[in-house]
Amino acid sequence: MDILPVLDVAQMRQMDAYSIQTVGIPGETLMGRAAEGLFTELAQRFPARTTYIGIFCGHGNNGGDGLALAELLWLHGWRNFKLLTVATETGKPFSANADYYRQRLQAQAIEPEEITSPSQMPHDSFAVKVDALFGTGLDRELSPFWQDIIRRLNELAGFTLAVDCPSGLNADSGHSEGAAVKADLTVTMGYPKRGFFTSEASELVGELAVHDIGLAPLADAGVQPVSFYFPPEFFRAHPIPERRAGVHKGDFGKLVVIAGSRGFSGAAKMVGRAALRSGAGLVRLFVPEEIYDVIAAEETEVMVNSYSPHQFEKRPEGWQKLKPHLQWADVLALGSGLSERPEMQEMADKVLAETSLPFIADAEGTLAALRWLKAQEGTHGRLVLLTPHLGELAKLAEKPLAEVMEDPREVALNLAREHNCYILAKSAVSFLATPSGYVLYPPTGSPVLAKGGSGDVLVGALAARIAIALRAAEADTSPYQGGYLTSDYYSLYPPELAEDNLPWLEGIMRGYALFADASRFAADFYESDESVLAGEVADMIDADADADDTTD
Image 1: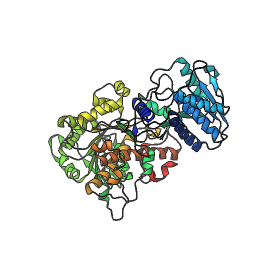
Image 2: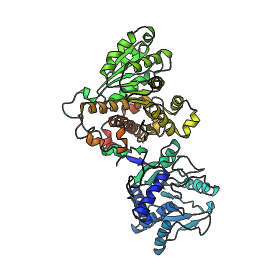
Image 3: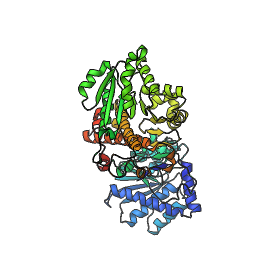
Image 4: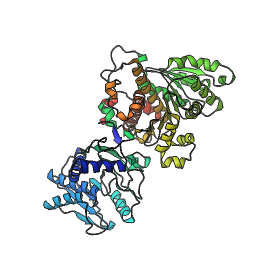
């Protein structure tokens, strides 16, 4: 699967209209192709033709997709389904394309059961419930009638497959319009929708499958996407290959990590461990003297050094100890567990001001990064990534958290444009805002990540993959077999992103994909979302796993 453009509702309407009116693809043909995608996804998961399926259809085009699915099931020998149409009144007309499939079903003596009151909703236990009530065009709060219908549909037992969009979810804002179907799987047509990528939507969409229905090319329709989704299937189709013979550890990046403080020693350990697990060649970890002994005793593969943050105030010893190692490194990771203590922040200020390394700033390191960005009035070509969670994003943007939660993408984009940096905003659905104005969505991880220390693991994975990609670009050769990290590989990226540094983007998105995969491996291994620790997620990072193991 490719990296996918993410469209808003207006863009999707434009695509449909151009494909039908200008290219001349009949609407019922697109509807039939949508049904083929639904049937494929359903049959893969429930191959038995005896599977009991309930198909709940509205009277618009989303309902038409459900009617077309019913016909396809019938033609493939599936007979054990119940077809239901829902409307607020008897005799309500169908859309033209939906009526086309209603008539085709009638010709085969298949008549849907009509529901005009929530009390008529069935009480059956379906193996599969197909939600084809509302599509992506819903932009108003649902009436009590429809809220009751959706509530009752959610209460019915069975796997829920949403057609194009869970009914009740606003496909632009990502918020529920009073009530929304909670799907196990959403099969969306053409392109993923903007509203799918919010924390609220993540609980409604379930697994996301994107089905190509043969729409006209985006450029032909005059549609310019501003967001892209990097699905797990992209990384599985293009896994990290085996290393070339003759490579050495320097080919895989050299990191300096400045992290940890009294009470936060674990953060430093997890960054270092995750970086090595993610493929980094050399990792040098700098921690304050107050926690050096405990870190050095436990970390054997990471090179551990200490510094005294107090020496940065009046004496140069602290800086002189760090300086040669920063000159040695390819990438700096700063901030995990650093704390807001004045001496720690002063150290961070000095490091950022005196080096030109690409850097990742996390947690308290983002505060120093923002001070540096403001003082420099931008990055002046330096590659900078900030990784705030939404609370930290509000702090950086100097906005109330409630305002940020309403539209975090716009807040992050404004910050990225203003300071010419990259913002990876962390939440249940994380995203990367670029200074060129694009939003990129990596694969989503497991709920086990809702635990302290997960962000430190992420920083290690990001830093490792960024260092490897930048080192390969500088050397103009990949340390891996095949074409990975070469121009052939980067040709897979959308041309819209050419203005950005593609090795930098690859490091961020690949690092996040490894992190997300590791969270799922850990949840499966421990058979729990509750008991998995962040350190165990770090230990589950496997840079070779995306070749085949993630399909389990």
